[in-house]
Every structure is written in C-alpha cells, then in structure tokens.
Length: 252
Image (cartoon, rainbow, N blue to C red):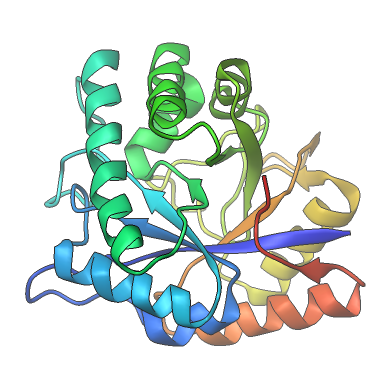
C-alpha cells in the first residue's frame, strides 16, 4: 500500500512571503506550484522548481482563478472557455521553468475556488480537464476524490489521482466543508492523523454529521503554513510508516 503526500507551494509573490517551502519540501513527495494567478510569480516559480528538483519530488502546476487579492478562493462568474484559457496559460508558464531546469511536469491540481467549482460543476471540470489533456495528455490530474473533477478527467483520457485532505472535514456527499464554516478545519493533530489512516487503509471517512462514506486516497494534501505544519507532516509520515504504508510520488 502506498500514498503520495502533496503540498501547495510557491505562494509568495513580490515582497510578500508565505509558508516555509524550503522546510516542508523535504517532507512531501509532490509539490503543487502556484502559477501567478492566485499566488506566486515568475521568480518564486523558478526558485520553487529548483528546490523541488533538489529533493527529487514530483512537480505539479497549481492553476487558480485570476484573483491575487482573494488568494483564488472566491468564486468568479467565468465561462468554460475562459477557464480553459487560464489553465493553459498557467501550465505554459510553469512548463517554461521546468524546461530550463530540465525536469518534467508530473501533475496538475486546480487551486481553491477553481477546484471547488470543478468538483461541483461538470462544465467547469470538463474545461479544466480538457485544457490539461490538450496541453500534455501524460500529466496526472489531481482532484477531490469521488467528484466531477476525477470523473471528467478520466472521461477525456487523463490519468487521475484522487486527493484527500488531512485537516479538512467532509460533507455527506464527499465535498469539503466550506472554509466559511467554523468547523471546516481539523485542528487536533491526533484526529487529523486518524482521519488520514482511515482514508488510506479503509478508504472511508467520517463526515461532519458523523456518517461514514467511501473515499479513494491516492494523494494526501498537507499544508506547509501554520505554526505546527512541519511537526504535523512529520507525525503523519511517521504514522503512515508504522502502518506499513509507503510514501511515494505520483506515477501515471
């Protein structure tokens, strides 16, 4: 049994710095790198790919909506054609830096509101998936487990990786509880680790309403920001190893 650990990285831009990328990268197996629309910029993309290459982890694009001020977490009234174009544009930007560092882009994971919109709206999910496929059909598409992101990516012919979250609560339909909800985040480390083990080993998760639903876990999203992020990820790694689960980067 194996699982990937992914983290959203490269979120600094200009004079603004977020997260501890250089500290978290050695602990994960895949990096989702912001492409400049919701966070990140050309310099940060370059530096983050250099770091990821040094630690031999999977490099992925993390395209988002064009909303720096809202960190890409606000829904936008945007057409599927526009979504297609913004995804292709961002993949192209990251690919340029992959090329100069002689590394491959391994996967794509939409960010924030784009991710949530795609999980719920078939036209949005199809536009994202088609953009990825047309750009490079060998890329692995990372999306929320058991949602339209995964089914639409499969339908266009992409390899997929079903993503679960260590520190997020789930609705009964498998969607993530909105961050606007006071109980959206799991702040207790032990509870989050038990959720991870349950999802990976039993392919189940307990929802916010205390119901048990099925879930697929190919990759676990962990966060590199926050006071206890490094300790949290280290503890997840340790527990996964104790349970006999190997931690390895995504493969198509």
